[in-house]
Length: 146
Image 1: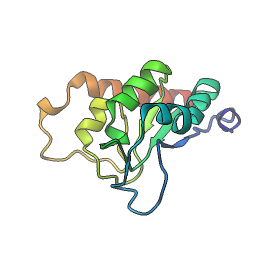
Image 2: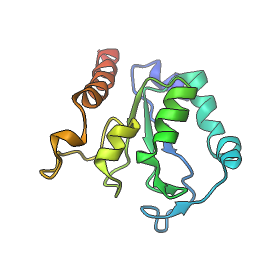
Image 3: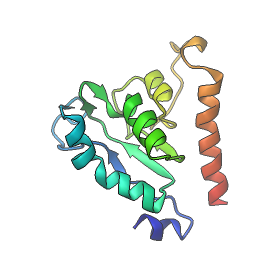
C-alpha cells in the first residue's frame, strides 16, 4: 500500500509506531513488553514496511512502552528506526499527545501535532543542530512532493 500511495506523490503514513494495543486510556497506558516480543511481534510489520516501501512519514503512538512515551523513546526512534533500519524520513506524533516536546525532538521525532513553541522552552533545552535536522527532513519531504 505504501509503495502504491507514494507512487502518486502522496505521502503514506504507517501508524501507530508502536505497541498501540488499545483505545481505552491510550494516552497514558504503558505497554510493558520484553525486547524479544517488541522486535518479533510489535515492530516486525513496521520493519518490513520501512525496508521494503520506504514510507516518507511514520506516526508514533500515544502510549508508553516500558515507561517511556513512544514519541520520546530514543531507543525506539534513533536506535531502532533510524539507526538499525536506516529510516531517513519524518517522524510525527499523533495529535495532542501528553509526551515531553523536548524529549521528542532529542529522540528523533520531527513534528509535533499540533505544534507550537511553548514559552517555557529555553534555548539550552534543544540545540540548533537538533532543530536543523528536523527541518531538513521536513524540507526533503516537501521537495519530494514537488
